[in-house]
Amino acid sequence: MGLKHLTIASLATLGAVSAINTEQRPLVDWNSPPISADSSSHKPPLVDSEALQATITVDALLARAKHLFKIAHLSQDEYNRPTRVIGSKGHLGTLKYIYKTLTALGDYYTLSKQPFPAVTGAVYESRLLIDLVVVESASPMSLTPPTRGKQPVDGNLVLVANEGCHAADYPSAVKGNIAFIKRGTCPFGTKSAHAGKAGAVAAVVFNYEDGPVAGTLGTPSKDHVATFGLSGVDAAPFVAKLKAGKTLAASAYMDAEVDTIVTTNIIAQTKGRDPENCVMLGGHSDSVAEGPGINDDGSGSLTLLEVATQLTNFTVNNCVRFAWWAGEEEGLLGSDYYVDVLPAEENKKIRLFMDYDMLASPNFAYQIYDARNDVNPVGSQQLRDLYVDWYVQHGLNYTFIPFDGRSDYDGFIRHGIPGGGIATGAEGIKTKKEVALFGGEDGVPYDVCYHAICDTVSNLNLTAWELNTKLVAHSVATYARSFEGFPERTLDDASIKAADAYAKGTKYHGSKLFI
Ligand SMILES: *[C@@H]1O[C@H](CO)[C@@H](O)[C@H](O)[C@H]1NC(C)=O
Ligand SMILES: *[C@@H]1O[C@H](CO)[C@@H](O)[C@H](O)[C@H]1NC(C)=O
Ligand SMILES: *[C@@H]1O[C@H](CO)[C@@H](O)[C@H](O)[C@H]1NC(C)=O
Ligand SMILES: [Zn+2]
Image 1: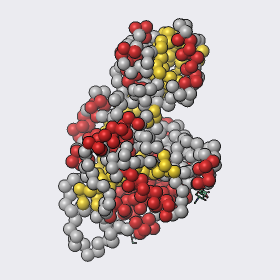
Image 2 (image 1 turned 180 degrees about the vertical axis):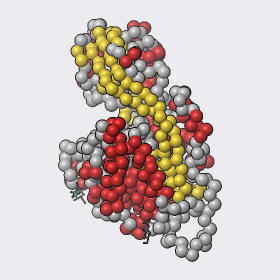
Image 3 (image 1 turned 45 degrees about the vertical axis):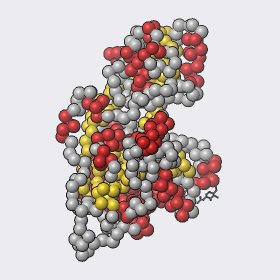
Image 4 (image 1 turned 30 degrees about the horizontal axis):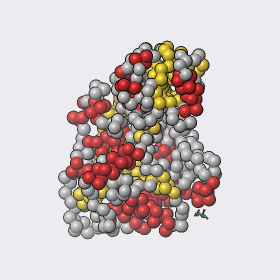
């Protein structure tokens, strides 16, 4: 059903990117021989959760954050602000920093870079007029194409039947006009393509709820037309007038661009040991264009870097695979790509995936993804409970949050791999009840600088970051040591059903609504 994955196949149709398929380097050295048990007389001790946690210091984390903020400034000339958005010097600098840090760890890890095509969009200017009035609240969808010739286009606003998920919902009057389509049932990208095929010059998707539509069209299509989102509140008067048979003249203008660039995931896997049983964890190396992304996801990606560094003083029984995804902010592109091209026999070796995205929000809550075995691949709940147990043991409160596709765990769950993770909150508003649980301020976002210029070093709560990094260390140490009691991977009907049920229940793909 519609936009499930941004696949290489669909992206390759854009033309510019097919070459990188063949140049792709192997993801990891699958064939590296296991280290024999007595290969070294100075063998470091087997990893132990308490010992690994004890290596985590706030000073080391803070030093990394300050360095990352400096790296974000490499984009200053081009973007007029610090950012680590894919394609920017700040992001390239981030990748270099991660890779160099890992290289300096000697031969503990097999490193690989996984290039992939990433679609990026930019909207420079947009305007929607209905009935001669500018609709201020109309917002351009991400990855929208421009209007024809990047010029204003005029037409009547034409109400589309049902939710515009079928060609038959589009009356012939849509041709040369602006399609007005209700949100729901199918992805925004499907609606925009239907509108384009019916000859619309632009489209507006209006919400069935009061709130706005911060959406994305997802994988570009030649049929897409310039598309806006409109809140239910603002759409209601127009819907009423159209239903009463009134004609509404409209004008749409969109100056936008959609481009494909190549960016890179970085993967580090412990050498030898048991390559058949891997614990995998990831954070994203990129930020949005609006700011430096030091909490989102500087915090998670630096936590991974620090844990990967400290782990080298220990031996592991199982394989540990760290990933720094790129293109998360454009719609989970890096992690989607990774699981899409992962051969089935490699998929099975990943016992679980742990997502670490935003671990140090200034007005934080200790959030655990509510990943459950009845609706997610079996094992997800055991992981969830590992986090629960740790917070409880440390006398801390936690809340469960929806496991609904907003971060890089999405592709793993869709491909049947158990997953979960922790976070500290994004644009959501902290409640009074949560203030009782965690302190902080009610009525204020968990991260007031989410996707903003002020997501700098001073946006981090170091208490939350240190604590959560210790929990990440605990999760790595636990599964690096043993999967005892953790369910075996299965690719049976139940897990396929779980992946389907999950896909039906998600309306986010990354930070944006897509349906
Ligand atoms: C490993 O332990 C040694 C000895 O305690 C220490 O000097 C070194 O810095 C540690 N390595 C890392 C990567 O922290
Ligand atoms: C956990 O929540 C309870 C109930 O609101 C509160 O009394 C307690 O202080 C909280 N614990 C911590 C460590 O904040
Ligand atoms: C981080 O959170 C803790 C606990 O709520 C609080 O005491 C501390 O002041 C916060 N630190 C910063 C830098 O905001
Ligand atoms: Zn993020």
